[in-house]
Length: 600
Image (cartoon, rainbow, N blue to C red; front, side, top):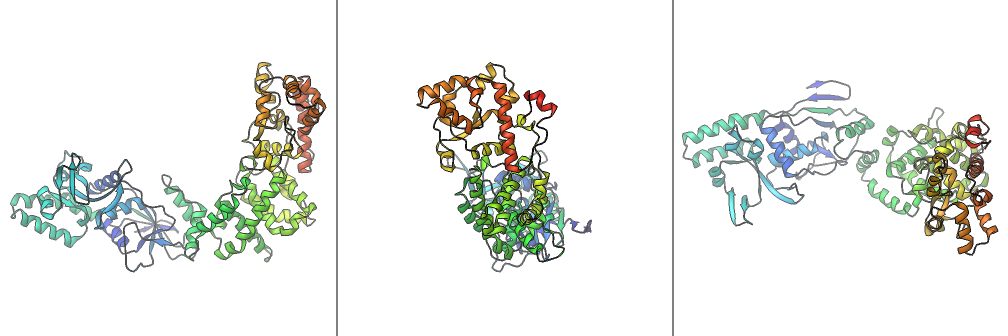
């Protein structure tokens, strides 16, 4: 054994020792590990590798007993103990291999696995001794899985191809049950009975001795490389290591680790979250808010409360902080965050953001919910809510939540709270800036600013062209509102209009699916005349509807694309300025004049 670092050591124990520790319950699985899923082909291939002394890869274990890392554990699949001991080590990587070897080599029961066609089967495993010693035979062919009656049949069960239903049949067919290979006493008795069955025939004894030397003895000496994380390893390191070694399996999220930690205290975090998630699903805008985000919000709020009671207390909600969240803190703040998320959904609805697809940044829900949770009833004050609105839109149009955001969350909460209590503007408001030229590159929902402007157009009082309805939470879904072109795509392409303009947010507005179908690919003048003619709408009323969409009607009636683009770009910039409370710089720049023909 060699120690190669302060948090882990290397070793290469015998396979027999490793499986023995599993059998005694000294080595168990952390409860966050997924179930055993290997099929028959994988198991046979693994056994074949061991019989050939081929490497099967390193195993990673975690020493238990650390103060920082406490996980609920469970026995490996198929193992039953009357008294389950506290484990000395947990399997982080190698579960599928170790479970398969334990099931095939140690366990005396039938093994429940699957075929390559995903059909469940119950089998025992045998070695075809002759094929094991045949240099020209594929070792995989020597590993036999056989059903519960120990008979391999063909022709719909009418023909018995191989019968191992008795020990004498095993001898006759020269097939050895794999689950006695590491059981010295049972294997010795089997060999004695084998020789007795063949009347101590010299050739059979020679055959058996050769099998011992070529197969049995190497299995006894087979070693498995083991990397063992020491109990001093911090929890975030365990999480990171697990994710890296399990790239082909199920990644271990922060939520899974915290779930395993809380399980030690008999608290079912997953069940609790599922109940909370079920209640939150009533609000479509919260559908993208996941369990790790929920834990991050709780950690942020808890950290802020603690910072208020210590002089040097800092606020933090990084992964390592979330992993250290205590069950008492979770129970203290989870209800506050759940209620604040509901208030967040209502707040967003007032901002005309109704579903997760329209939410500029789902990550911004983390600081928003904690701000609302801490403010409590104070949040409903008009002056307070206006500041929260400015902070929110500053983050959207400053496009400040697109990367790693934990550090921003950590100063958002205390700084917004200070701001609403007459302190300085928070950094998110100060950092926010919007380049007027950005309007042209807002071409799809992939951009947070695109979604933000879509919502602000709705908030400004936008009405549907044909129904004339104000768009609220109910009508948004009832009449299937989406963002559509004002100068239609077909018309724009036919008239060689500049795509950066006609496909940008400047040329788009919220419309019902019905209005969009009626507009079709016609020129604005043509479809406006059609609306007046076919839908009993007076021209002046239609013009007023257009104005609610920040459109100058004259430019549409005259198919004046360039004037329309310049005017509407100016109107959209005004919306952003009103939402963020900040003047947009560069509206009179040379670049803007060259692109739009005038200041905007």
